[in-house]
Image 1: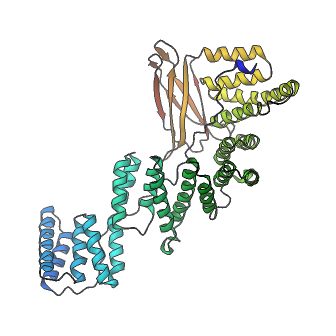
Image 2 (image 1 turned 90 degrees about the vertical axis):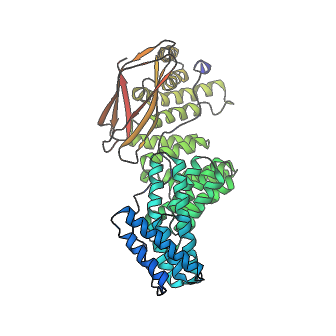
Length: 479
């Protein structure tokens, strides 16, 4: 009977946000450059100081622009008269370029001033940071708008003027990671860690989290690239600060398993499951996925089961647990026929209630129905198997939720598609989503209106529920 149910994928998926640190709060508003006590007695330098201060306090743009033109004129004259070794010239040239938002000019001028007047280094660093802040925020805004090109340009500019704090390096690491540019992503994440670990940043909790997340992301990048030894080392590096992080332990165990260190990997997997009682529910589901991918099906099932005891309606976990049982039903093809049939029946019985819950949550999913059919098939219930397969075959449309995750602006983001499975135009009835908490109580509802979809075409949808306590979704339709 096994071959009757075709098309059930052995792969496993879990829709949740696993990105690194979220884009943080805005850093600070604009501020004026810091002052440094330098000898400004030379008439040209003194004039430049007055012009720059007048420009800074100007109420009208033309007054500001005129004074800045005069400032650069007298500072240039000072250089032409041989005052290129005077730190005040370079310091106020930096102030001029700051006012003009000329990053390269300010950086170069302040480098020269700092080399000639070490007593001004602190003031220069303060000025650099004040120039860095709005540029960093421009990059953050671009990231929120999904404009990676503009974000990259902003963060690169930010790094030119100031490198004593890690955010712009971290966000560049994220961008290059998303673009699958391994070397660049690792470089920026490594710089993030180095800067976060500086003495001046060790008291900043958000920067410490940023550095830790960077280490985890590097581990993931190497893991995905099958550079297992590097992945193992970076997981371990991350775990120096977060030794009981379930995702890191599971990732490290998976990398160890892939690299052939099976015994050590199994010990780590078991240590994760020992932490299950204290793990957040989504972390349990993530752990289950990692265990499945590593071929640790029994342990994966334990993780999914533990998570579903808390959040019984989480669709992906229901799908994943059912799929895990299905995979376990066929682990040993060397069994005698009677033993194999008994094992299939055992796992079919385990699959059935989970698959029924899955179909109740996601009724217009062909893959969910095929898993339900497989649970009957494994128990040799031919009539029920055929009835469910006919139900799957009769589906006129398929609903796929591809994203269900917390949104950066609050609430949840839900995205997916409705697929017309027929060869004719189809009027899809309204689809009513219910969003439930871990106890299964409805906390919010939303509806996708009735619509017509062309043959073999898809219609995307997006919902933004905002109720607190959302843990899962389910839906129903008019048919």
